[in-house]
Each structure stands twice: as C-alpha cells, then as structure tokens.
Image (cartoon, rainbow, N blue to C red):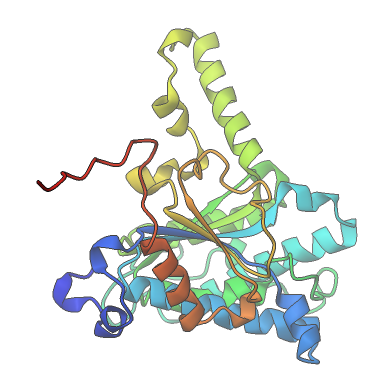
Length: 318
C-alpha cells in the first residue's frame, strides 16, 4: 500500500483521507445489457464496455492503496437459467482465461518490474488447460445478459495482472464448473501465486449460502474423524473454512458496491458482509467510472463504523 507521500493528491483534493480508505472492496456488477440498450448498442458491446470499466476500477484500486477487490461473476442461482445460456457463460469465462494466459506465456511470464515469474513445465510452453481451443471446437460463443461475467470483462484484465502485481483467486463451487474451466482456473492461480501487491477474487459458481454450508461440512468431517470437538467450534474457526480465508484479515470486505439500482446482495458474501458498508448506485456498470468510484468512497468515509460498539461519549465542557 502506498505511503502518505504516494497517496494521490487528487483524492486529497476531493476530500478523501488515506487512513479511511477501505482495504477490500467488493462489486456486484450489474447493468451491461441495459446500458447497451440505452445507448443503442448490442449486448456484446455492453459487455465490452463493462470490461473496460472493470479494468479501470482494478487499476484505480491498486493506485489508491486498496488491497483487494472481489467481483461477483456467476452465482449458483444462475444455473437456473436456460442450459444454453449457462454453457455459454462457462465457455466465455474459460476462453477469457485461456486467451489472456496465452498472451502472458508469449511474454515469457515476465513484466517490466520482474513480477510474475512462475516457471512452467515444458520449457515455457503454455499449460494444456490454457491453450486456446482450435476454431470451431465447441459451440459458438454468444453474449448473454448483463448478469453474466463475460470473457471480455474477465479476459481484458489479465494483461494487467502481472504488470500490477495482481494475484488471482477464484472462489465458488468447483464441482459446478466444467473440468476444462476448473483446470484453467488452477493454472491461472498458479501463474499469479507469487504476486502480492494486490488481490483480485473472481467469484464464479458461487453463493454465500454454499460458502457457509461447505465450511460447516469441513468442520463436521473433522468432528466425525475425532479431530475436533463440537464445543471448540466458534465463529473464528468457521470463518477460517470459508472460501475467502485465503486473504486472512482482509477476508471480509469493508464495502460492497452494487450498480444498476438493484438493492440486494443476491446471496453474495453473506457471512463476510456482516459489518460491510453497502453502497447502491443507479449507475449501470459500464458507466461506473472514476467519478462514481470517488463518490462511493466519499460516502464510505462519511460513515461511522462501530461494529456493534457504542460511540464513545464526548466530554462535556464546564
């Protein structure tokens, strides 16, 4: 994180304070399709605009000293959508990972600052899971509604992952993902595992309820194997088995931002958001720019976070 001298002066001039900046911001991105329709554009062009918005938010977050962003990509509930749409989404996410990791491999896994130098098997060849599929292999890829996280949105990030020292984590139910996507995820996480400046969590095939249930199952298995006594289970132990535990003390977002005017969490980070500040904006995701981000951060900094405690009494003057 930047020191005081590195905190952007434009943020200071806008009334933001470094010591009050959130460390972990999560996003429920919404509105690509509706934004495109309002602009007279196609859904695909809406997703392209959404990808550019996410790239900008990632870069701004890193520059402003935010340590983690989490983006809600595809929920467990989205599997209730038509099978054709679900298959399309899985293909899009996988294609995004394959294409961008291929670009990373062609650059020999190195950047100007020397970050991201995980060795690869076979003398530098791209892992099989990340090789782009031959033309015509599999169904044609089509854009889907604004609730989907397209390869444009995720893939457009990857060329800045190594440049910005970003480590990628993918959370969600791995058994719900196609085997090829799961392998691509594993390889992509491995390729960025040495990065530590900034963390990006991609929540795909994820739901907050699933996260809690899988943590309970892990603890129950330990009890069954007599490795744990039920009475020893507490909140801290359960939290340590949630999918966000890879972030340690940064596992719980300070702030969740949802775009497009929807006023709900939609089963996103339910346990982790117990004391998270919620911010809702009518801006569609492609229109969520630097100005909108600053407005959200100013709102966050205006709030008093007490975490259940009583505000200290102010001494009275005689």
